[in-house]
Length: 130
Image 1: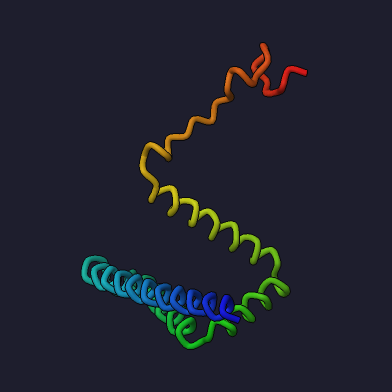
Image 2: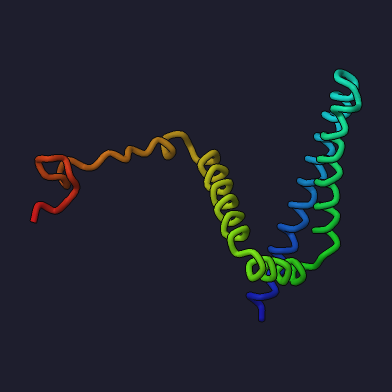
């Protein structure tokens, strides 16, 4: 339906943005690799070149697949390696939380997690006092 089409458009747009960001990151790593080559020699720079190549391959792989293909690959990964999938999901959640927190005004980030004195008993433990 219409909601599915809209979700697919968002996913396609997100995939486009992700591949562009990966391409940009690969260029940054490639530039850094050239700098390492110049300063320390190609033996050390080869690691950075390999990293840049891996990022480029990832971007190309994402670009070459449809959203449906990516979802199918994700489902297969979850069935094949649930531990890796859970770890990846936790990592993505952590990164998203950091991104959201970084985008918040500083007043909203400075949340005080100390218990409200009105909701604690004399010992400082949380409770309703019942």
